[in-house]
Length: 138
Length: 138
DNA sequence: CGGTATCCCAAAGGATACTG
DNA sequence: CAGTATCCTTTGGGATACCG
Image (cartoon, rainbow over all chains, first blue to last red; front, side, top):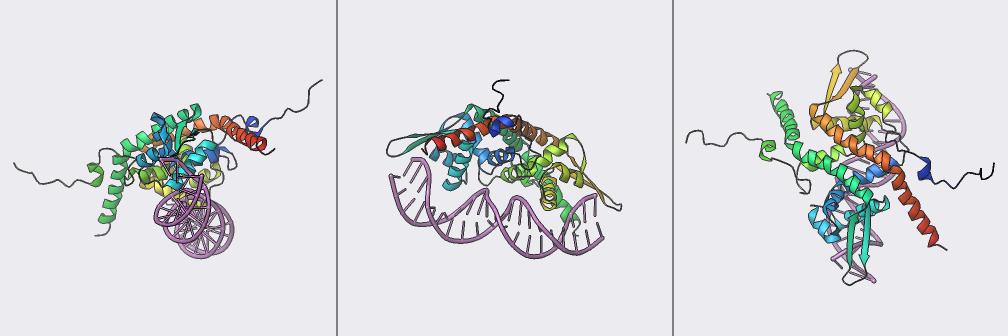
């Protein structure tokens, strides 16, 4: 019975799969980052090609520099995005998806595409509620 | 040229498709509801079958009654969830997905499934960063 | 250009109590 | 059981200023 001591198993190796329904599962944090207000749009923007910071800022309407930077740091920390800085002046920094990030982006893109397509029907639901409100107000 | 006056076209009919990259597009609100902290989990929980309020609360670890109720109202307002209340005592209320909600749930489910599966690899990214931090601290 | 630091606000979210 | 009401905390997020 040689070498029977517990090997140095990291936390990540101890969980075979996440469970989003469990309150304390680390997958909850990943979900938060990916589905954060700007996380979704960043992943989609990076799906096509590598982008610079300023390019993304221009692509994603309404995002502030602060939140874009923070969102990119979240995704980088989760291993979905790679940040590559060139030591030049003026600064040049590129962001791209990791292989894992590409997979993530595909799922998020599917959701985003569906929303953009189904939006008119969902707004009709609003219209219907508005009509109800008007009908009950006479 | 009879009947040339503009017909009563609702806002929903004027937009053929949403654009999530546009800051002022209504699709942004839909995205917020669906990807809110509890919105994702509610949609997934309801994908399999109709559920009562208490059932969902027990399924979704850590959710408060307040946020569960609010999330359900958001999704109901977007036409993704139907709320059916029975006039009995004690109260009996059922929630189920609309046809549109089923489509939404499938996309969200795909994303959630992927996260649960890929989580170990993403936590490895954390481990790697932790190792870096340790290595650079000597 | 690509950030970080600071301040600030609004809104998401939680805890508790109460009600039909 | 299924909420609502109230109060409170947290944090996502914006605006501005500053820096390498």
